[in-house]
Length: 171
Image 1 (tube, rainbow, N blue to C red):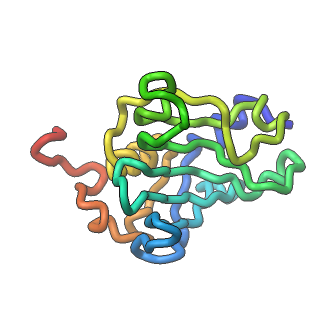
Image 2 (image 1 turned 120 degrees about the horizontal axis):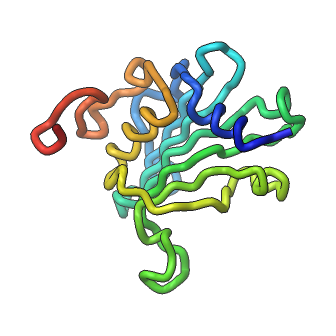
C-alpha cells in the first residue's frame, strides 16, 4: 500500500545515477530529451530520471523522477512519476489563472495513486527554487539526493556550474 511516508522516502532517499541513454540530450519531437537510470543507494528502488526541454521555448521544460519497480512494493505494474519540476507552459487557461504559467512542481499523492493517475500527479505548487532548466535540474538532483549524475551526462550542455560550484551571481 502506498503512503505519504513511502512517497517521501522514494523521493528523498539517497540515490546514484547508473547509466544514461546518452551523454547529451538529443532532439525528439521538437524537444531535447534524455533519460538516466537511477538506483537507491541501498539497491531497493529503481528509477528513471527524465529530462525534456522544448527546442523552441527554452523555459518550457520538465525534469522528473519515475519509480520503475513499484510492482515489487505496492503491486502496481505501471511506472509512477513521483515528482516533476517544470517551467512555464500553456495550460489552455488565461494568463494568471493557472500556476502552469509559472515555474512549478508536481508531486504524486496517495490520492493520485488510488485514482490511477500514475503519470499525471495533480498536486502542484509554484516554486521559487529554480528559474531555468539548468537551475531546475541542479535543484532537483539536490532535493532527490542523486549523486554521480556528472559521470553519466555532460553537464557542459546546460551551460551552468556543476553542483557545489559558485558562480558570479549565485554565491
